[in-house]
Image: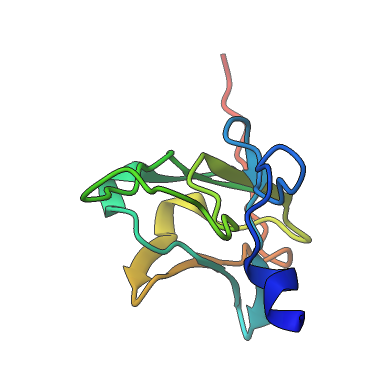
Length: 133
């Protein structure tokens, strides 16, 4: 019977489809250019903002989400599916152009982290005066 195929008891060691409990997976990130800004977006769901870090150099963006532990009222008698990753997620992205880290903003709204990075103007130049000793 088809019902027996899906609902029969089996040894969990034989049908382990869960993600690894330890280690870091790569965080998916969208990177877009809108006028004079680069915008990075990534889903960060179920994590307090204090557990997320963003670091930025002129040419690289790094986003890190610390591990979380989902709370259950009781230990499950049986796990039918375990597809969510509760460990750390991290991603470093080489940016296609230099950005200004000092004027970058990040916000977390409705589970989406958005990082807005102003692009440095490559046409901008400055004359440096040479001082006499």
